[in-house]
Length: 125
Image (cartoon, rainbow, N blue to C red; front, side):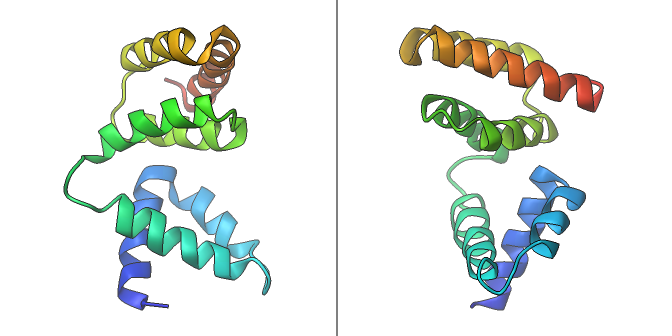
């Protein structure tokens, strides 16, 4: 493992998802699952999220659309919280979710709105 890439990815991961969430994920990792935590932190959160081509807000908006289209509600919830942390507004999310309804179907949009409202309520947004 490249420690420098891991450390940079860890900083980005914590900035987007929050220290508590990331620390919990790492603390719950076992000998079996720690390799995946290292992989995600290094390749997703450093090599992808830290690329200069898109800012974190834009990456969050893309993740909301992709995770909704892929029907990944658990990751959608995590990234909805991250999107708020990255400055994506409720109004922007509403527009993303309406577009999801058009291109991915009403059930996907309904789930996005439902989960986002729960996240907003939890975060006091």
